[in-house]
Image (cartoon, rainbow, N blue to C red; front, side, top):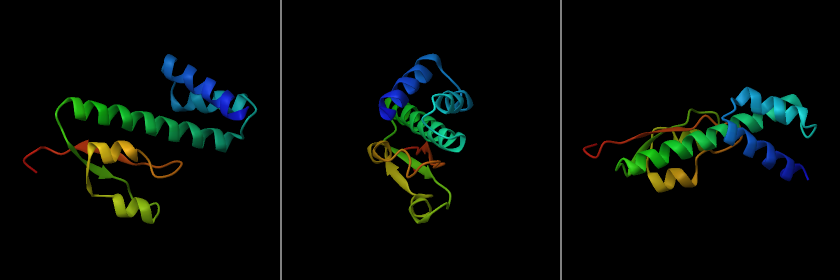
Length: 111
């Protein structure tokens, strides 16, 4: 039930272009989560969607590799930070955990 309710809210958010704050508010008001949990879900879902969109754009533009920017929040993030991944590898791991700050930028072919 919770998963179905969250999915419905996320569908509305994507369709209507909600901000992370608006999505968090809607999740909180649904009664399914506390404010902090709602914000975590909102941030994470927005990060996944943003990274997926960026990676699709990079691939369509002809880039095959991306730089990984991931900070040092935990061992997995620190290990990924600064690496160069294929677009496919990045698409398979758009974030590492809830509230992850992972981001990507395209690698020019001459690098």
